Image 1 (cartoon, rainbow, N blue to C red):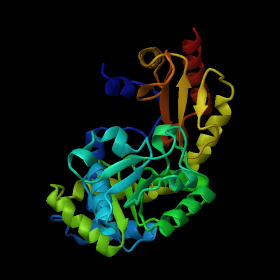
Image 2: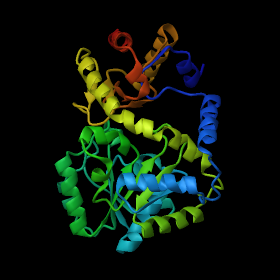
Image 3: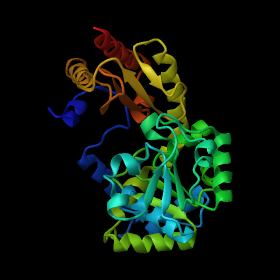
Image 4: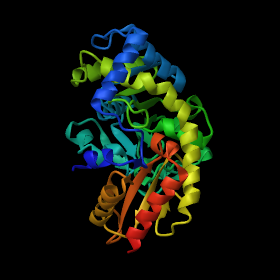
Length: 361
């Protein structure tokens, strides 16, 4: 069996949301469309899609928002436009930025902008990291929360200080908010307050929301309209956004309402993990409903243990595993979503018992 088949065979799944088959997803979408009288948009023109875009803009405290087919297209386009406005093609990025780690040098090869890596890859930004950059920056892109370091955030005071610094500096402050929905509960702030002070924000419609794909870019109306035109020029003008809009919108309010419970469950999980010293948890305290577990085995061994426990005990522990800095170590990501929220406490402990025993065997 491949990973997806093995996971589906399990009675207990720890990370993420309850998986749906394509048939289940499309059936739910069809029912929601029927109940809400959904019509297809045509190249983004459609009252229902546009109402959803406006809803997200209001939620984040911006004038406008526009759908884009991928976050990869959304962010580099937004940053290129921001740089053109400011007259500098230099963008400050954290070393773990999605643009640097996962986008195959698109910003460089497509001549969008020049990237300057700023800060320590194992820590969130501080205002001192940005103050140390002497160059004239066109834009600064800040991820909240930071997925590659376990969902960490700067402190609220540090976030506010960074906003003030960037505003005084005259650069465009962009938020990579792929998981913004996940950090509001941890920060104890409404989304519009977190986004205040940013010039643009990208949010994902799948990740924590569970849609089929797609993203939204929020900002001033003029900035969003320019971005929308460039999305068309770059090949992002799909004739119907309807499947992506529907897959997200039909569960959007429910997912946002669940985020505080997901974070509370994450806090519970941290308490449980204290009973398993074999796991090294990053961050030390929860800052979103996600975390990394550092393991005393290499990546291949971690995956072999996962697969054996899934096949023999019907417990799916995690998805991907990655190499860590030290030899014969690795780390995994746990996203605390619907599955862990609904899982029986004893079943979670049973899965951790199996995992811990295999790691130290």
